[in-house]
Each structure stands twice: as structure tokens, then as C-alpha cells.
Amino acid sequence: MEHRVVVYIFSGCIDRNNFNMDKVVIDIDDKIVLNSIEVRPGIFHVKCGNEFDLAMTFLRAQEFYESDNPKIKGQPFSIIEYIRWYARKHSASFTYPKDWDGFNVSSDVIRKALSNVNDWNMYDDAMYNLIVDMPDRFYLIGTMYANSSVFRLLDSRVNDNGVLDHEVAHGFYYLNEDYKRSADEIITSMSKTTRNRIYKDLERMGYAKSVWNDEIQAYMVSGMESITTAKVDTVRKKFKKLFNKALFHGHN
Ligand SMILES: [Zn+2]
Image (cartoon, rainbow, N blue to C red; front, side):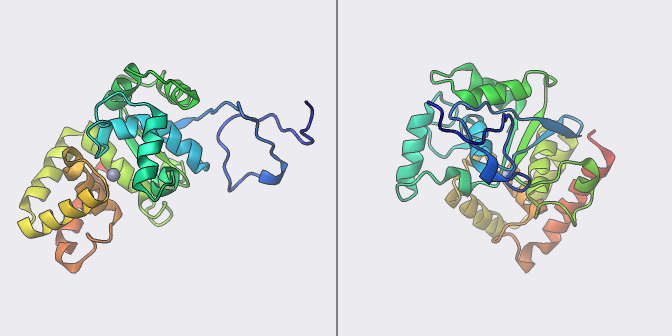
């Protein structure tokens, strides 16, 4: 059946900023090819302007890591069941790719999530191909718009409204023991009232308890509505200082 007039041989992630979508006829079995850039030692960044492909590539590992559903977190789960569950939770629509701006998973999580899959799909292939040549221990970030050069990353004025900073902060927390210890210390030093208020927000947003502290430090770096109050300004400064130190001095 020949019904395609303009066919561009296409592989890779569609970047809707740089691509003329009118001229692309996307085939149903187009391969997803994603590439990453090592933005900091051990921290790899994938930029993908197609939010659906980005979200679906990360979904398996991301939700295995931190879903608030105990049948999904740390468990093998099928993507179709996940989609159904998520849609039921969100007005019968699978808004997942629109709901999340960035993704962040460690090498441990990705390997565990991919090691027990009964419904392997093209997005698992994309993830597998992305990580197959990476070092033993790494941190993987996926965002839609973030610029991918280290130089721009270092200039906070041009980075992606804090999304990339947020994910890199997770990377430091995972890879850099000193960073993690200092961040945990700052969290402990916060007032109980403030900390509990933020925990509550994170719970509402769907984060599992095990990642709350990691999320606090990342949101302190990148910004979050409930965090940006005068009361936590001093704490935020501490987190930003810690983050900038790790950013400029590399890890360790
Ligand atoms: Zn986060």
C-alpha cells in the first residue's frame, strides 16, 4: 500500500523545535534512537524534544524507582497496566508524558528495572541501547528542552528553568557521597514544620517516601512553589551553594 507522499528516512528523537513536522510522515515502527552527553562525570543527559518518546523511554525505570503505587515501585509491571492505572488516576486520560518535565534514574535502578520485564517494547530497546556502553555506575537524566552543552549548563541563566539543575542535583546526590551527606545535614537542620509541609507536598505530587529527601534537595536547587517562601530562603541558599560547589568542582 503506497500512500505516503513525502517520506523522510528518519531515526532518532523528533525535536519539535527544530523539525518541520509537516514534512515528516512517521511510520508506525520507527526506531527510537536516543543519544546522551556526559554533562558531569558519571552524569549523562538525554535531550529529547518529543515528550512522548522521552517519557515512555524513562517510564519503566522511573516508576520502578519511585512510583507511589506499591504494586509498581520495585516490582515488575506491564506498561499497558501502568497506562490504565495512571489514566484512571488522571481523569481517564494518560497524561504522563505531559505531567513530567524531566526524568532521573541511577544505573542501579535502570538495570534492576530492565532485568525483569515480561512486556519488553521498543522503549526498552531505546533505554537498553542508551546505557549499554555506559560505565558501571552512572546517573541518567532526560529532559525535553535543556541545552546539552556543559558550558550552557554552567550558566544558570540559560538553563531550562531549573529542570536540568534539578536532575543534575539528583545525580550528585547519587554519585557523590559528600554531597549526599551535606544535603541530608541541611535537611535535618530545617525546622520540623517546614520539612513536614514539604514532605506533604511531595506526597501529594506522587513521590514515594524513600525519595523525599532527595527530592527536597533537588527542588531546593531548582525551585518549587511550596519551597519558594521567605521562610526557606536561608536553607535554599545553603543548597544552592552546595550544588554550585559540586557543579564547578566536579564530583568528589
Ligand atoms: Zn526530582
